[in-house]
Image 1 (cartoon, one colour):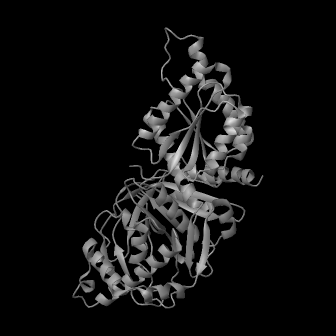
Image 2 (cartoon, rainbow, N blue to C red; image 1 turned 120 degrees about the horizontal axis):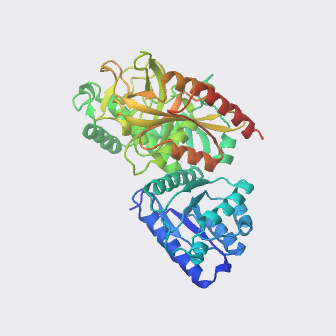
Image 3 (tube, rainbow, N blue to C red; image 1 turned 45 degrees about the vertical axis):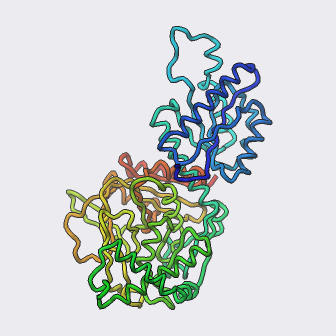
Length: 497
């Protein structure tokens, strides 16, 4: 079973009438085999559907309009098996509004050196046909991903599958609704942004709701629902003794469960895929939502603290991309540094809201004071993130455009236990090193709020940015501060054309 049932990508193979019916039949047979091979790959998250070979401008335009109208189709993969005159693609590509991947491959991996003749050459001329196609796509300025190599090569399949995951997220973004309970944290710059521009560019609808709406939903939660949630806490986590069945603070655990129930009701009824709250606006709530936010994130709901709707969107979309893969994804914040020259590290955390999908072991359910917000002590899950490679990414609004800033990192074990730190946390070493990575991040205007994922690499984020027309900058093992600064300067010219 594919992780995204009901969604599909169309494989469209180009040719022309010039070659005759026998050649076109071979092209169609080969196209069907390529589509079947890609579809059968375990890495492929959606169905790959073979479409009829396009041989004319009318074929191309009809296919593109059909793709636009299909709710199941989330992207189109093109491949020119033979020479396919590119002018016949103009009207179709100008109309196409689904993501495009150009697969530059050929049916047979190896040349039959001893028997190759002009019949073979005319049939297997992707090297010719795909260059013609790519020239036209470049001239039209159509955004796309290009993957080169044999269609049975696992590396090629993985790159197509990665793009497919980005296409799923792009499809999700076009329908995503975000609820903001309360406004942004006062006086903070990076959590602000143009919601209308985001809806025009991404399709994301961000709407504000009073905290009173959430408080009313919390008050409506039934005792049975609260009982079920508390039982789930007891079953799934190490519950601190004071929160246990006979603990002195059991009622505060039930209050946290009641908040989770209220959040679930509003999210389900409103069809929201992400939400925000803020500790500066908790009127009607007993405590800042903690464990409920963490558990909703673990189920794929996006979240941003202090009204940060852009990070809530990123958390949701990255979780969508990662569905069915090993490794977790969480809301995160770069909190403090370990500046030992021998092994500098970043300690990431937040007040409460880190997703347990990244936990190294079973989380602990605890209650501790919170020095801000003016409410009772909130219940939260406490754990340390599992070690391994990860990506930290931020979506920021620069005023004239959105930018995704990403850093490849390695999550590591803390140097020592953290017995007095009452929050979930992750410790990581950024690539290429802390000084270079932090310099680049600051130069790019990256947020302190991020999404951390151990399920995905950076390529899928780049693919998504290309689909959305969002600027993407990557900090990785090859980054230098000087080259990165120049990249930012060049991007300024490109995006302000």
